[in-house]
Length: 437
Image (tube, rainbow, N blue to C red; front, side, top):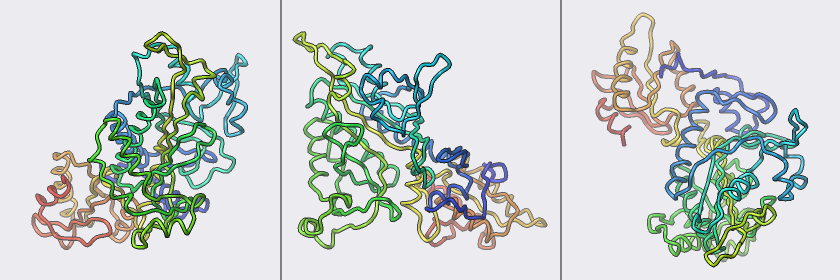
């Protein structure tokens, strides 16, 4: 993609309504545009990052045998009345009526919807276990939306739902998702800590939230750094191994400020291993048994002919929230650097352009063609602008690698730089090798 053709409305002004780095950066680089309070349009640069995150989330869900589907954003109030949550959910639920006067709602979550689908479709224990997921927009009418996509009203989310015959089987499904989430955040280049959590309005008696480290996070985190050293490769998908994995994570000290006690922290964690920082919640998982299947009469025939309520869990990852959270976790010295797995482009070519001499631009275009042949996603800055402004702009955008075509270029060698690192002069072949790695 040529920068001159890319729809990326960059602004130099710092938006007054943006109080945190991710909100400032996403508005300044034209990743999003506010439509109304807490609701945003996703422009090409931001949308591209979000879709890369979605792809990784989807791949890791598929690996554990979860099956993708799609549920509507607008739901009937009737199933929510059956579960007892229609009145209890509160003012965050956007309630509407269609032209026939039927009560509808814009879904804030999908426990009722998926249970209704399941109860009309599955009757026998032979069809279990099942994990179904979808990736869809949600709406929660936050009383005070703020921090850009971090706490907005309309957001893009992956939510999965497990169905099992027994508590034992259901907890194995829970552990599969737990494993999947750790792998997902690792692939996104994020350090995520799973922490025992309250279940809140979702309900149930088993819950973990996944918190990534970020100095601008809302939660204070106290943890033993050993939690980042657990090797997922030593576990497999057997029930015993998955349970051991969750036990291993749970045995290492990690709490938010609500559960923090200084004496416990100092007693249980060696001083050199103590991590004190802030974090952002990016995922939450719940096991709630028959909280929804019982009132919604979701029954399964057992092997001996009895009918039992199916055991359920729900599992969410905020995909749009992860875009902002990733920025918060990776912004250093006013320079953004995207993790390579979700960067909008793999590399940007920055030629020094002179109206009277097109040599550098021609070299840049040849490099661009060579990289495209290697399936490297590349952006070419073909805009006639001084180099100082170009560097400031690309530090804001945060593409992890830069190829600079200017005074230091020699024949087939060019200045190659990883953000927040020193540059080096390399041949195009060596640059391609580095980028392919």
